[in-house]
Image 1 (cartoon, rainbow, N blue to C red):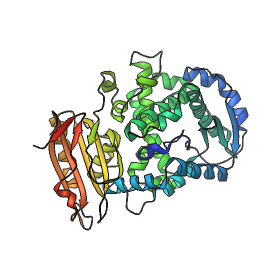
Image 2: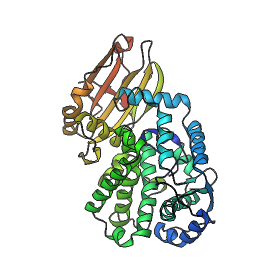
Image 3: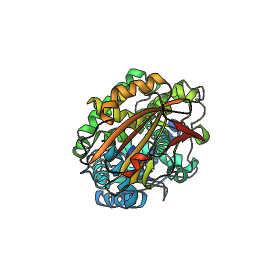
Image 4: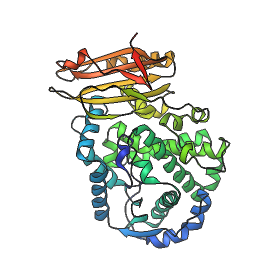
Length: 405
């Protein structure tokens, strides 16, 4: 995978790590050379230049990951993201995000594609079968790098949700191609039941890894989503979209995790609404949760560890902001729905959690409203003494100011 190791840190940028299992021995170059024809057939693209490959020790890979995290997730951004997800209740206050990611990805890496150098890397001592499987996946990313501006795609930080959707397409294509290489009959006849079982197997395998097993739900689901939901979307694209002879690149790239989760909405052009929060206070961090992470929020509220089993949220768009105050950070979140029934269901499922807090010195509020004609809500979690309570930032879609009803 090329970076975006976790959805909540999709802005990590180009190269992090793909999953794998512990060591043995095999030359990456011989593996890559033998896989070129099969990867080209499965991906439907040809290499414009031969993929370059090298081996790295596990210590070198960890150092590489640490450098990438420092480069793609500067301290200020990491702190803002940690704070946001802690205020949403998705991360414990004790979690240090970059340390967790470094441990998590170092635990799983067996090979990766580095878009900066356009090179494939395998981990020294890896068993042949595992190396072949991972390198086939990573070779699809190398192909993508020869046809797509990966750097510009993954350095667009305007929306974490849009970034995650793009990652799902790329990881999904690589996953489906790998299945086509190693299990062609299964990949061609894959049904909804197959993808459900595939997702269960991925979760079960990942849960056996110590760091992954104790990671917060939002981190676990973020790691899994691009591979499982992305593969389902790409299978739909190849079998039911009517565009099987093309790829969802460029302007056809899904614009939200909702479109990845619900291809029928992608097909009918159900684009996300751009929610804009008006200025107010010093902004520490601002972004979009999207449907995938909103599902995690619902699952956490319901005591479930399977957000993938929840029904459609009816998500229309959202944006949150973390604001600096003298007494601690404040969170303001606006969420817009497709219809009133979806808004009412969300409040029924999550309302009690969002309208109360056990955070010392803090106060929580949840208000229903309309942004233009769209049912919406506003969630605020902020220090009780915050003077901003009397003049909360308003929100709009395009140029329509929020009207509280």
